Amino acid sequence: MAGTIVADTLTHSTAGSIATNYVVNGSSKHWANITNNDTVEDSFNQSSIVDNSASDCTYNFASSLSNGLYANSFMAMYDLTNPYRKLGYFGNDPSSSSFRTQGSYGATAATNDMLTSTVTTHGDLA
Amino acid sequence: MSTILVDNLTGKTSAGSITVTSEGGAATQSLQQGLAKAWINFEASTPSTRDSFNHSAITDNGTGNFTLNFSSAFASADRSSTTCSGYRTTAIAYEMCTKNTPTTTAQEVWLYYSPNGAVNDTPGDNMMTSQGDLA
Image (cartoon, rainbow over all chains, first blue to last red; front, side, top):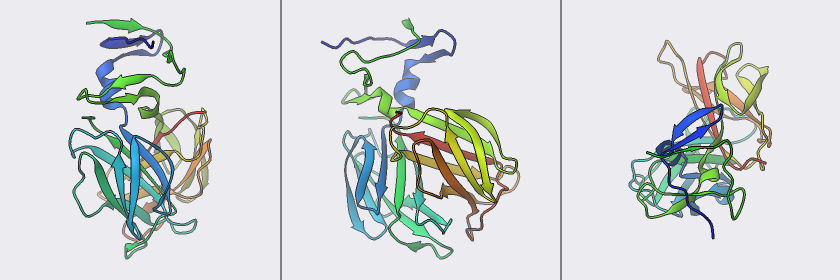
């Protein structure tokens, strides 16, 4: 049987101490690396993605967040020659169970699937 | 209040997996997989590292193009690295994105001016955080 430790603080012999609420609150609750808007290369706490259309993707959490007010950060790669590309929220407001992004590139912000999209979510789990 | 004095945390059933209970108590989650494995704040013109965790030296590949090297390698290049860039003294929008395909030991990035995509070494604060499994 696996053991359970209940503690408020973790102290390392040289690196200092941290209250365990920082460990729980400060850990990311979801991350993913997807390619071409439809293939999950690796992820954590993600049940699935939905390729809604070119550039438009919904990420579904395996375990829900407590609300839709979490902090997401993104990065995208469109191709190997164009430095101008980004991911942003799209469509629906983020919810406790999913969020939706759109990828764009170039000075006109043309929408398209990104070669690679990476996302990370911080917040409280339900 | 209880305090644990410890240098290493290792899972009992599986060494690389320790479970923590969620804030709301409705779920459990892997401690290791939720932790950021690397982060860096660097200045681009020199370039130089302001502060970092699990990053080694920065490689300057040319204007607005840097390789951010990790001290301890990731298990896979399919991690999630996310970024933010800014100019300290002037309200000018910059962004940072992946340039080449990431490797387990490094992430090559481009810095560019948001309105037109021009690559640039100017941004004062450039930040990247990486999530994924370490080797």
